[in-house]
Image (cartoon, rainbow, N blue to C red; front, side):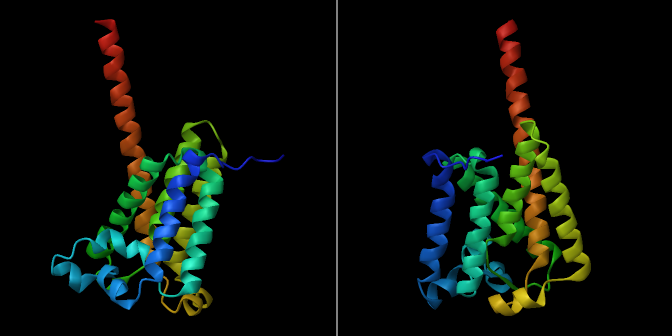
Length: 205
């Protein structure tokens, strides 16, 4: 069975904007990198933008390429849910959730960059959306990412990947991002249900 990719413009704009932003910032130079990367000590000096912008920075070209490929795979899996504004908001909130999780629950992680935490959140959100739309594959995807996260927490990061990206893989960021994606889906679902019930009540008055 051939699965059609979500190539309509409304499904592509969000991921393209995110990819281009990450690429542009990668070539912007070390000054921008130092200004935007997640840095615990800088955050303590109220440089709060780093909670989001840290996700857009990358250690080297391999790191950027791996994350862009991951973003493309997510688009291929769940792109039909990626209306531009919704996708950008989803990325921002998953980035924020990842960074807040690191700050409060991983105090030894001083420095962090990369899309991977937010991408794990977007992955979980997309899998939940699949389930909401009656696609059983969403359950398989959730089971797969849960197993991956559990393995990373138990076994740690891959030494090969760490060598490739010239940095230790922040497995805690993956966990916090995934949790953020799940929480965002739940909040959006509850909000949609509440609005639906309110509309129904108004129609019966």
